[in-house]
Length: 208
Image 1 (cartoon, one colour):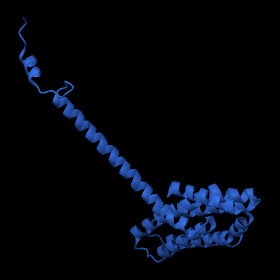
Image 2 (image 1 turned 180 degrees about the horizontal axis):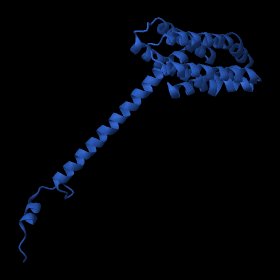
Image 3 (image 1 turned 120 degrees about the vertical axis):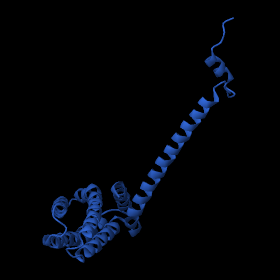
Image 4 (image 1 turned 30 degrees about the vertical axis):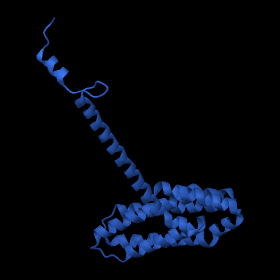
């Protein structure tokens, strides 16, 4: 009979589990499983946190009422944010940058809701020229935001550009709130208005 090597003897002496596997190997597999489980749990918590943040951002619009009420609520929130920016002085550069970032996000979400849902509904209702004009005005808003992003926050032109942006936004909002949106809502059935509300909130949630 061949003599067993020392390593073979050590292997035979190692404890095994019920399936004949070395317990160290089984334990290592358990560690890997625990790590994978913790990673999956962390990823799940991250997704839940992201969804919670999105829900918090979109909820004021959803709670306002139908699509028109929701958009008007966003208009009012934007004007309040502009009030805060216009109350800053040239030394508040960090605050201006933070507020500008918030303004850009709010207007981007608002534009997505209108451009992807409401303006197409306006065109469908026969108001093609009006919808195209509103969409063009969004382009000028983005131009002003680009200019603000690319100038020093302490620049004397910062508040002047904000004031110009506000003036154009207020005209845009007034046309929507007092003329075009009420006309569109009145021309649609309750069911169609509900469909628009659901679609608009879905678009807003994507970018909230």
